[in-house]
Image (cartoon, rainbow, N blue to C red; front, top):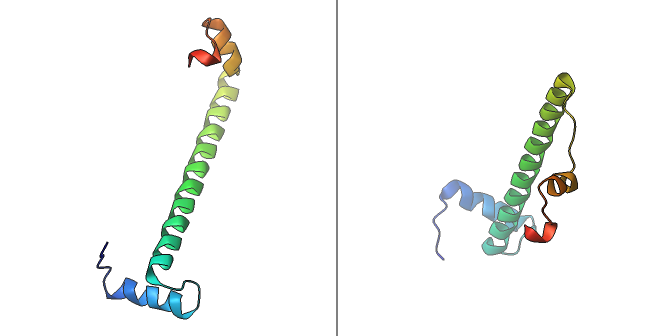
Amino acid sequence: MNVNLGAYYEQKLQEIMAKGVASNKTEALRMAVIAYERMLEAEEERLVVQRIAKDEERWKKTGAKWTSFDEVLRRNKMDKKDL
């Protein structure tokens, strides 16, 4: 694949290789993609934790109670293998 990144990103790739972090552009780009993926996963996790905290606060205010997954299955006469 041939990709035109532009002068700014080409310079960044050269700096990464000059520091010895990556031995070539392909390796540097792979590392960048992996780092970006990790960043996205961390952001998704942060948003999930934030949402859970909001839901827990709302449940405390309304007096709602937790229902386990197993209880939901039992009430609906389902088994995990049915999912």
